[in-house]
Length: 462
Image (cartoon, rainbow, N blue to C red):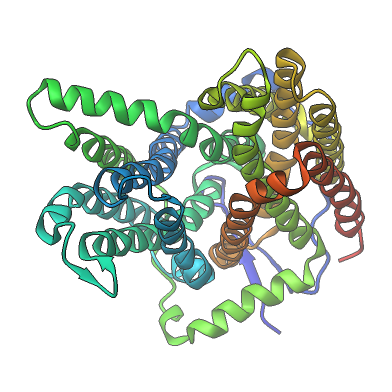
């Protein structure tokens, strides 16, 4: 039987072995000895984590703003007259989603074999260079030459999108597996509160602030006489390049790569990760809860436009105000969980957060046309989402052996990325067919029921 050894570099080496069928360690139920008020301060004093977190902020926001940039480029170069932009955007979303389906799990396997730091640095630098190449690619291929009815310039844009998304699949598990390498185990909860909140907030805030930031970048570029469009590409590429530069300064303490890893078949490694998830109810339940959590917030990002349209004090394009409320709630929730979350078992925190999300979505369905009640409900939704996401992400890191983290996080990101595409594609259609309130009630039911059932699964004997 295969034995897995877990060793966190940031702490004095303590070797422990357990088979995949052995019971997982008990969840912590009491706060650590140190003062709670110092937990975030101690985490942020860790220069390596600060570099990792800062790199995450710039990288993940650049991912979301890159999609906004693609829509702007389509409207400027390929959409004709009153033609619907939906077909063009759908093609871009497919190109961005396919790598998550094809490579999400495999990327995690390779991350376990490679240096996490250099994976993160390299993927950001290459993504930045690809985005910088967009103006030259559009100029080279033009807008008239076509293959099978598709302009060559647009096909080249799809190829760049596909490559950027593929590199993202490697960045995400490398980042997640690096956290236990640079953060002591007793600080994993506050560290993950910052990481998970940033990951969730980027889904919401990135789309909300993308257009005004790109517009500002183009204005600056035009003022500097570089042209009205070049600024947006430089802005997005700069985010990736800055992330790579920041991560270059990080020290993960990784030892030599496993010399036997290359001798194992890639599918054997992937099978090992799947076997671990099948045999570990707690980790499997945590991943499912994170998938549901991100699906709900992806749906909110779409439904927020309709909500803003219904509220008399707002215009549809001001939906970012509603999403900002969710971001504030996430920040507060992460702060609370990071400071006091160790007082309760991880599964209890997740269950309470799921019920809080269900309650917030129900209130939002009842008062969709009232500004302040809607802002409050969305804020509670963000708060409750952090109460679910932070403990679950921490639990996965605590329970997963070090040599399996890349595989497990690769599978997790694969599932989340696939799940994100469904609400982004279906939420608007469901709202148009059934109305806003029924969709919100359905999301509330999914949150409440799944939180209860997965909490029971998590507590089953391993």
